[in-house]
Image (cartoon, rainbow, N blue to C red; front, side, top):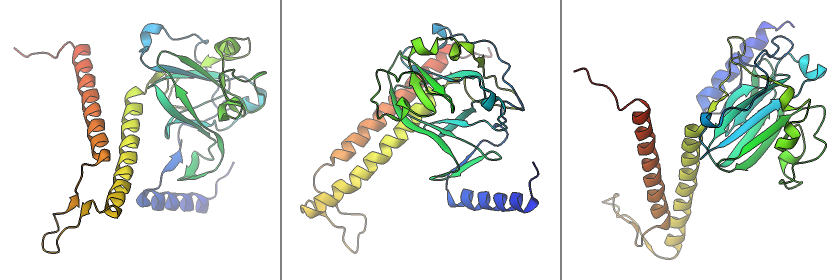
Length: 286
């Protein structure tokens, strides 16, 4: 396929404008090569050892069954969790991610020359769903654009996005059938198709959850102040001293924000403690 130079120039200019404006650019340039150009060559499917992931978290397996259509693909779709790109899922492949318990947002986007979307606009949004995962549980996510599972997951509401469509949550029993995840190969990361899967993304999830919760509470604080103003429980600052004024009663949102900050500080302390244990407590020159 030939790409016209004006198209490349216009795309580059558009990217510059979007980046400067702060708009999110969804792209997998250099990572989106499909099965036709780069067939998966990893090991046969096997569950990771229980010692390789923390049972306080959850484990997500992603897999794509083998098909001639997927095997002819030039570019493979990208998989995002909580708006972060982790891998492009090629034909006949599987991989996994260890995630923090709670609500995790899953999205699959199809790229065009590595580009997938700008802000709220997506060139091709194949899947868009939120799943609530629990500590110690394993989840199997099946991606196939040609055929759906014979039956939906019994724990899902029929209206849930993962109960139909190209990306579906399936049971362990279903995934272990011939032709499903047990017949796929590991999606290894290499120079031609690098990825950030087969790893724990728990800390990233926790940081994202903290930022989202903080943003929600800050919005709550603004609304709470507006209500107090209407109730006459807010003193305006003097024209000669702009740093005065404020609510005349404690803010519930401030209490929640303080609690959130304390919880996050404890989480960071726990992370540091674990790192020190893993490093043997450091070392001394003398």
